[in-house]
Length: 148
Image 1 (cartoon, rainbow, N blue to C red):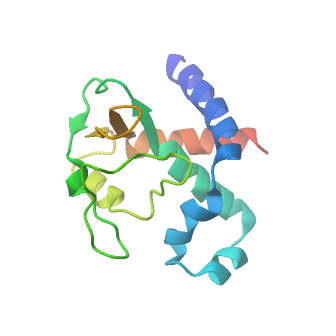
Image 2: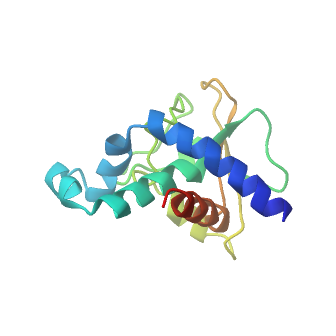
């Protein structure tokens, strides 16, 4: 029950955050930069995937309990193969789960419950947190069902 209450609260926060997010910037990497294909994609699926990307991340002032800490320099941009540097500044409005190798990093761990944390020394908050696959999916499903 406690988990449902927490997820509902996170969902409400993410819905308000989604309004501020640039879904086109978040989703364009999912379509390999092809804007036409992106605009032809079914709206409900587009919104779900945008919410998934939004729900995948949050920023924190401390490392969450039981989180695995990884370096920003392990994050690779899919389209260019370039690695992020310690100079990277987190912008949750445009950060795309689909633009980087986040899924590959999550698959490195057994199970779907691993939270990964990245120190972000140049950002307003010192950590970017990548939620677990399970939590991201559950939060997105909850948000999607509440919008229907």
